[in-house]
Length: 188
Image (tube, rainbow, N blue to C red; front, side, top):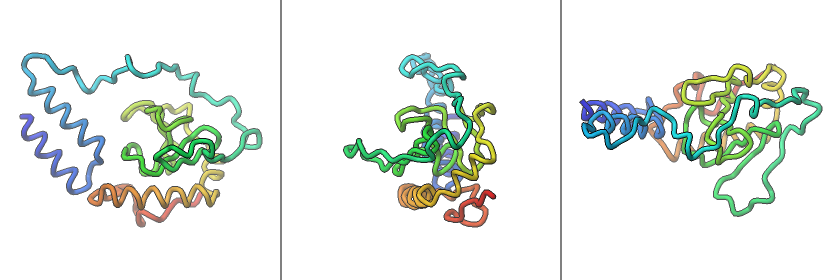
């Protein structure tokens, strides 16, 4: 059965239906299903031993007013970083060169690139704490979405990430881009 899972995963990745991280995850699940000696642990369960554990309250930002926080700041102190980063709303790090396409291209990581979760989908304002697990309490409000998409630096950064990802994974079809991958939402 694992050979069929891998075949369908190969086809899905090559046609752009899934991104690279999901392709890797499907291959790991196929290997786990094939393992009869229970030598491989279940890849669907997150490995929390190596990651920082955070409660939902750790991700809450008590300053919901836009006036109280800077809208953006770059990362000038870290010139050695292999990524081009943009910190938005003083909490979401957007990175050019991020190979992950979940939940969107681009997407924001909470406070720093190396933190795997939570992730922000800037198109919808939804925040995910794991694959397909949304934290509705962290969802961006309409005024936050207006602030985000009215910033020309952010739009330029998104454009660069989309172009970079198109070169990185040319078969990825940007499935949610209805009008084209470089047409971004206009929040009013």
